[in-house]
Length: 173
Image (cartoon, rainbow, N blue to C red; front, side, top):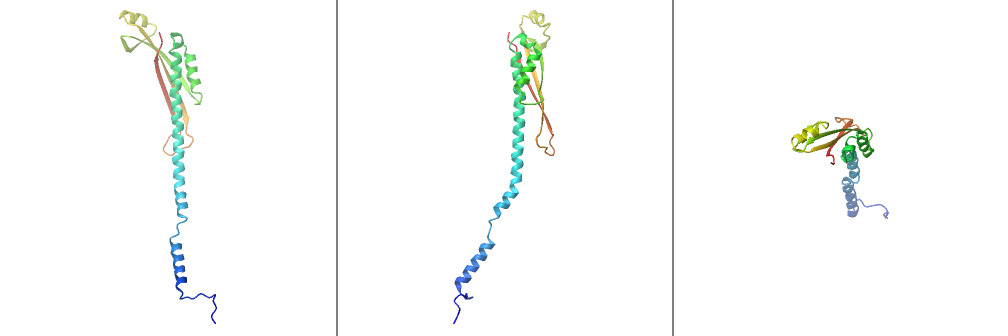
């Protein structure tokens, strides 16, 4: 008598199952996604790091420009504040307190209303402008500078970036 637990090698259902298992093993791609992730993850991480660094530098540049605007806004209030160099520099550096190493310089210059693009010395401006029947226009200029270090050193790019801001405003009469 034949043992029922032995499989018949000529049984069709057994052969079909064996072939389908072999085909599934050949087409098995369950690890493909993991391999793709392992290849793409470092590139994605570098792109993310570069975007964060760019955003940090853009923020610092905006802060440096805004500091110049704050300093010139203080200096343009009156002729007294236009000559207050320490106050203008303090207003600029206080506005850019998020940026370490921010420095500010200021200049005060004058021109005549009939030739606003020509600068004249503020000490001689009243006589120079009144001779031509023009008014004296006073201006304040603030320049800000900051050096920002890169968090990550990229090959081919500098490790420090110098950011500049400038603002010019006419002094209230």
